[in-house]
Length: 163
Image 1 (cartoon, rainbow, N blue to C red):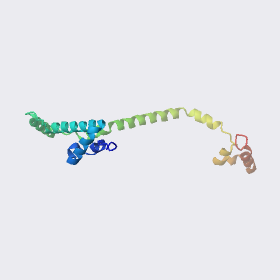
Image 2 (image 1 turned 90 degrees about the horizontal axis):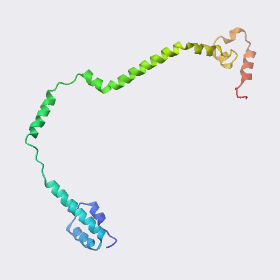
Image 3 (image 1 turned 60 degrees about the horizontal axis):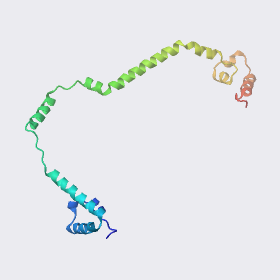
Image 4 (image 1 turned 90 degrees about the vertical axis):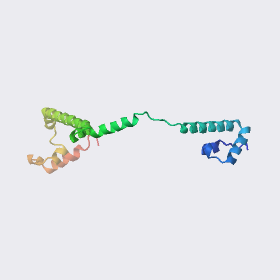
């Protein structure tokens, strides 16, 4: 019986739920095994403490019911907040963040339109013989470029990495 420890049996069920035969087996085994004896004693003490705690009753103070009922009445009689105020409490931070985002976007738009000279300089520096300009700009061939000049420009430039 040395290999058959009773600790697993004590962990599976409460000590009050064990049959009389199981209790006799546990006591016989724990007489020879010190680890099982400690587990059995701990389980018995825990069961005793639970029974003692369950038998205690806590009496409420005499004015407990009066205070609870007064609190319920006060809550029922208090005026309810208007719907708009309740909605603002729920979504106020979201609306505030959206307003800040709109102000930032307006500021960026105004700032970028005032610095339009940089965009004009970039357009002025564009090569009129680049393939993108010839293909994508309508009326690019109106300046008298022949088709063979356009094709030679497109195929001669290739990639700018030397291929």
